[in-house]
Length: 95
Image (cartoon, rainbow, N blue to C red; front, top):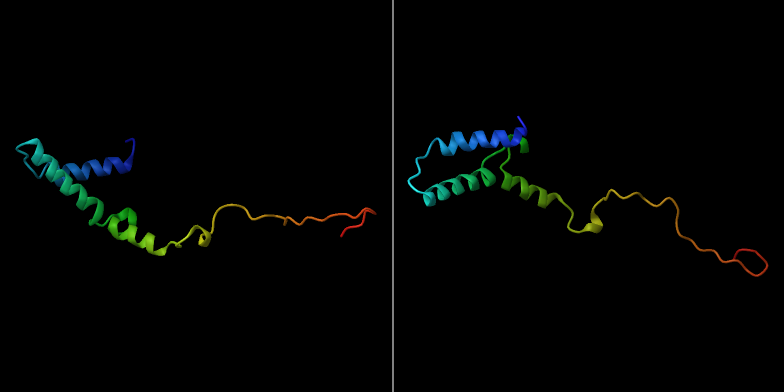
């Protein structure tokens, strides 16, 4: 098995769509498979998402994220020092 997610999807597609329908032409097959795909990707709960439908999961992600990049906690390191410039006088003392 190369990829468990792909193998799982292929099995579901075959069991729930391809084995359940008899297609009379290519246009009908495309329509039925597309309807199954839309249901699978939007309304059907997925165990990998905690039993939530993908469309609902996406809405939750959008609702819970900050509105702008400035409000997000990034992964960049914080500065260790501040950039304070100091100028010296002609006699060598700091201003």
